[in-house]
Image (cartoon, rainbow over all chains, first blue to last red; front, top):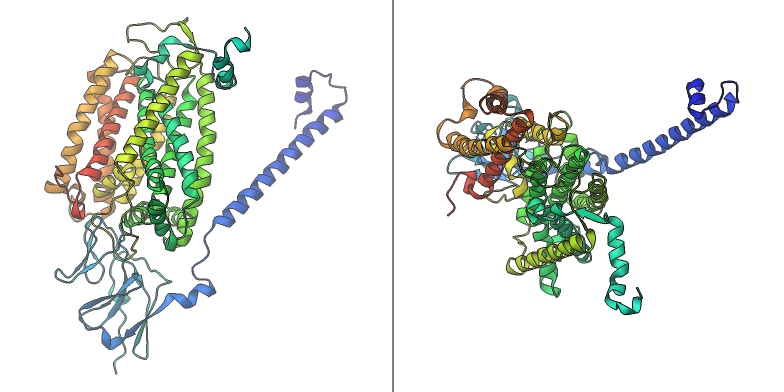
Length: 180
Length: 436
């Protein structure tokens, strides 16, 4: 704050009631600050209001783990679609299991499995993926997302709440059922 | 003058004085020429009014819940007198509004209506265009049919490619991690409250800036000097009657279109089955076509750069400001024509080459995708734009304004061709086809 400058603007002499003027400018700054604070409060309120709920919260947890079926019901070298429309269970030729997302990594269309050509083919922009989810035809740039597979008592479960993004297929992502 | 002697005038006087309150008393006679404005701004205003009117009616019948939305529209079309018509008017005036606002912007640009004192109004107008696009996109989802559902998925998935904030932004837009009831609720709220309110407020600002600038640019030929004392005519009746006639003609046109062609309502949305092909709404088809050829990050970068560039157009320190002259000058017309022809030739050529012959995206082999799909096409694109600019400045002795205008023409024509390619010339599996 520069009292001298304000004084000349108001056309008053320097020795004339400098306190009154600086009080006025002090108060207007105070009011502006309060106004700004009120604005911030409303902005904060708006953003908190519109922020989506966390997917991992306790109430959602129970619904995201899906019971897929017995290990034996997935023959090696097959792809099984699930009614929920969110994932495929892939049983590789060596018996390993993968849960692949149905969502094309390009622009989010649902990719059907073409059994005849042994690939996932996106109807929207012709991206193609092999059985492990790797891209064999652009425009998609990443492999299909995967979900964690849990095998307990020879039952396959998939946690659809934890989508895992990946660049490429890695053998470590495959889950093998325990040998009996 | 006694009121009794002239009853009709007395009857309308409150209305005409109200209209005059918003408008200047007199306007320059030459700005009334239809070939200056083509009535585009007025048409846009009428279409927005139609949108508000039909939108409010629709709001009485629509249920913004995924399980009921489709059924509520089906019921509207079958169970309500004029239900289908009201929806068709809303649909057609929404689509026409995008076209009319774009054409209006082109008219303003090519008649030099973006120089001082109209600079800020260019920015306001572009913001209005963006709001109109946002309204259209949020409205596109509401029918919750296959077309709506998948087009929205495509558009929202594009957000994911924005660096750093992309995924978060996508979650905010969707109201969660995937498209669902929260998405429909938030799109409905944006479509029926936020965007209309912003549009109406900005329109008021837009009109006020027109009046502050002293009305429209006064048309003249390149050889003519600007007229400091143009002939004036009274706003009422000369301008208001023309506007009323244009408004009625626009409404009649929309009505005829809506009676002839119903707004489409396809199969209910099925999240497990993407239709083939799935396309974004036509006004975003240009971006989708870019995505066919560029790495998604690059395509979005180009779209963002073009948008920012459009906002900067009035602020590029031109040496001249030829308001009212179509295409700025005689040389401006030549360079604009050359740029349009260049774009009309090279854009289809690149699209067809990329589709059938060279596959630029996979060249050269072995490089990481960020290079082959990313840096190389970006460099090519920037080189093309800069090259065009330099070529124009050298070969045609074009001034900065003329060169910028030519680059603008090049990009607009290219964009129109990209859009048309995606909408008309792509069929099953997004392969090129000949539709006729």
